[in-house]
Image (tube, rainbow, N blue to C red; front, side, top):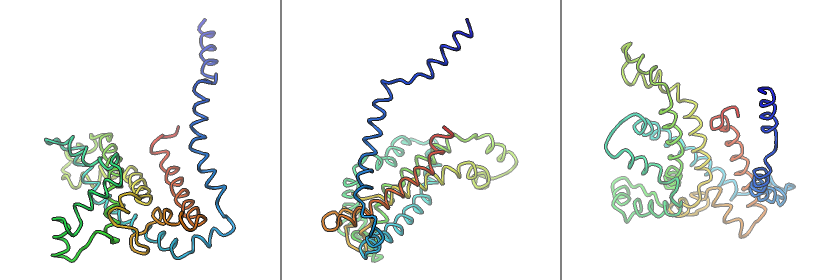
Length: 271
């Protein structure tokens, strides 16, 4: 009887649940068809010429530069913030976490409006920066970096905070009992344990910063060579050069697929 039951269980596991497979196929098609359309419409014969145009070259260079700066800022400020949220108990921590993760759900255009009101020359902070240091964030490369950091850092923080919460703190406690101070424990024990998650969070933040559109165009504008990143250039080229817009879209698609492929094991393990 046990053998019969085991056989039935194996046959049940081997059956294809049609009620789940059919909607799954439709869902995959929903995601695949637009990408197939993009690949089918691409002008492969002069793809390199489209990517070598001045507008495309400026947009790609600016996107790479600004997204790397945004990623560096996300790491520099995100690691301490993630550690505070994961390890310290203080009043208002849920509110601080919600505030940190707010850009994940906030429409990017709304984020751009908020940045504009906070850092424009007419605002308190923006006016002070301009009057005392000559720094203007609106319609500048620095503003582009700020907008990308605003939308990208939450992805880094949420990834690293989850890693810090899941680490075995007994190793840290053992190091502390051996005389290591907090900084040594963090540098020699905690940081190596969460380093893969820091790398994953950095890659995710970089990809998000690279694809940012709404906050950038609202806060930093769309000035070629200064604030026009690749997504903004795609938007402009759609009105005048469809092949160029498709070429830049393919670059963004390739980058996104590479990042998601590299991060698969961090999210799904060996499934």
